[in-house]
Amino acid sequence: MYKTQNVKDQEEKKTEEQQEQRDKQVEEFGQLTLEEGDTKIHLLNIIGEIEGHECLPSNSKTTKYEHVIPQLAALEDSKNTQGLLVLINTVGGDVESGLAIAEMIASLSKPTVSLVLGGSHSIGVPLAVSTDYSFIVPTGTMMIHPVRMTGLIIGVAQTFDYFQKIQDRIAGFITAHSKISEERLLKLMLETGELTKDVGSVLVGSQAVEEGIINEVGGIREAFEKLRKMIQESS
Image (cartoon, rainbow, N blue to C red; front, side, top):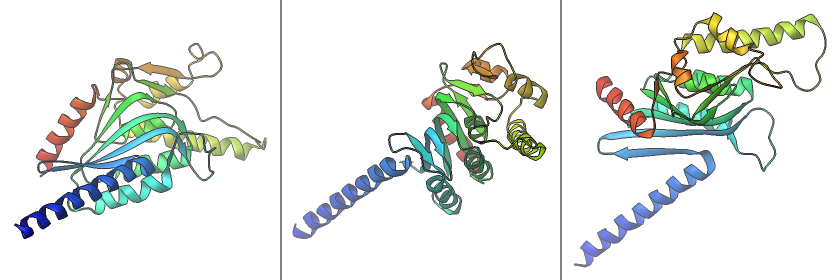
């Protein structure tokens, strides 16, 4: 009787410790590993602004690339985790860091699915298309615009050539991981009649699917069903 109760207490303590670890993982990194039966899925939450080499104000919601990159590397190296679900609601942010995360996701050998919730703006577009399959909720938005230049700009030809190369890298990644053509993507980026204070386009829900950027309109249920199906097919 004593041994049975002792084992039960140890199991409860282990469960509590695991729950505390899960809560800490969500709070600090916006990430969580979900286990349902034989399926183990890693959840990556990309929210707020993508923080790069400079720290953003403490009152800003951010996704820090120095947190995400090691977690993605650990996911690739894990023998137990079978797939990745990426939930996206971002206003964009640091271009280099966002593109680095997108490249990491695209290079994973395990099945990956993304779901655009509130919005996937600016550098969030490459993040949304970096997975093997993508969803967007009916009211989700995607803002597509050229790379913005902020701060002090040195007015020499090399500066503009540099920004053009960044723009080409982003456009090349998006077209390589979606069905939209480069010509159509550039047209959406340079649209002048939609945004009052900027150039670019906003796509809502099914519009992103019609343009060939996102695969399908759906929510969390469809995203999980698709990912689990992909995991079964890859095993």
